[in-house]
Image (cartoon, rainbow over all chains, first blue to last red):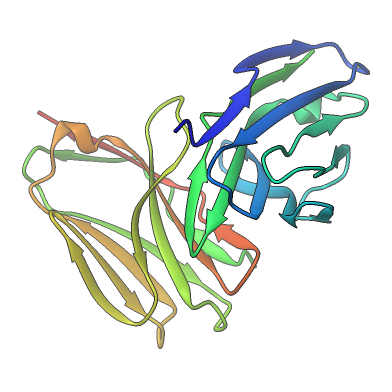
Length: 110
Length: 109
C-alpha cells in the first residue's frame, strides 16, 4: 500500500518549458488536490478534484492545469514554466478529514 | 486577512519541556481542525484531528479547540528531539482546507 506517490522528486526547468507532475494514489479516495508550499506562505491550494471527471480551482490556479480521468491519477501540468513557480509541490488525498500527502516534488525554474 | 494565522517561530525548547503551538482563524464556519507534522523534505502527516470545541488527547499530544475565541492549540508534553519538525494547523468547512504557515520546532537534547 503505497498511499500517495509523486514523481519526479526533483526537477529543474528552464523558463518557458512545460512539464507534468504525476500523482497516483491507491487508497480509492475520491478527493485529490495539489498544493504548493513556499517559505512564509504555507500550503496553498492550486487545484482539486472531488472525483473522476471533476476538477476545480483553488487559491492559486494560474499557470497550472489538471485533469482527472481516473480515481487513481491526478496530474498537474505546467504549461509554460516561470521562476515564480519554483516551489515544493504536494499532492494529497482526503477522506473524512484525513489528508494523506505525497512526499513532494521540488521544482526549480531557472 | 488570512483565513488562518500561525506564528512561524522558530521555536527552540530543551528536551522534556512542554510545547504550546497555536493558530487563530477568522471563519466561524470552520468545524474540523487538524494538526500536521512535517519533517524536513517530507510531506505533512496528520497528527491530530478534532471536530468540536474542547480537548483531545493522544499520548503526549493534546489538541485544544476554542471556537468562541477562534483559537486552536497543540500541546506537546515531555518533548523529545524526535518532535523537531514543522507543525501546521489546518481547518475546513468542506472541500477546501486552509493551512497555517507552520511553526518550526526544535527540541534540544
